[in-house]
Length: 342
Image (cartoon, rainbow, N blue to C red; front, top):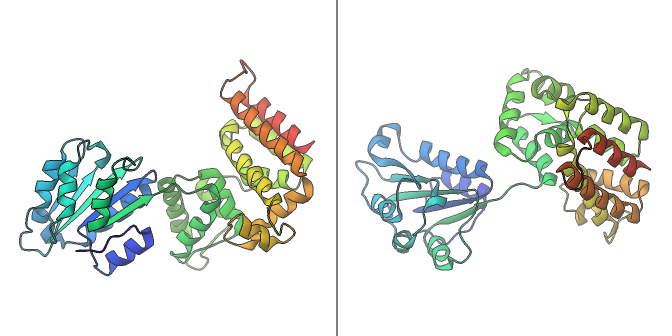
């Protein structure tokens, strides 16, 4: 029986590639991307194609109960080393007593994969969690934070022998956000478009393949605000006001809030005069990523940053109709940018 585990995605995939299987994989969390990658790999690589008809079972939590899953897992494989049982929508299983009993004595020839999306196991079910950890792998797939997206994009492309510059990374992260399934789909489209002789992603490639303008996008607006470039910021805001499909207040507000929130934290860094010190304090992947915060601390006082954060919250509430019966979103964005820059 496998040792108790509560492990990372990379370590799970490393063991799977080495065919070090656990009898149970309980995959849960708000980010379905990693859950799908693990379960799909198990479905495609544990058994040979000719073994799957009799030894691979796909169940849905909305159609079966815990005793039925446990019964399926207790079956013996037919002319194969393993049988694989994948339970999708495991979050719909209410009474888990039969599964808890199975987890305490799982079949060594069964690989049971529970896919629990859009949440995690109820924290009150401690014995259930303990039984899973005692026999196999418990993995929580968490949503990436905005500041983690550039590193994810760089790593994803690097694994495909593709380079990308800082600006292009930020444009993609700002425009697509933390939906990893959509993000990787767009990145795959970009990779396929690159010629063999030039495997680099540039702002022009991003514009051509993803449809995000290299000149007028969230990254450019953020950059103008960081550098307190009043003319450029107003030029971009006017562009978005004239072209609402190109960008909206609903995509810009989280981006600006994230920046100024981190900028406020940067003021409290023990070594906020050093780019490396600020990067470490903000837990940024590279020191160059702290450059915008060093610039921000020169252009904005701590008091101004606190006021800006309050203003962003106010505009966010108004954009959702609170205390705002009829001001259009474009006017709200102009109001916010004026407040930030003056």
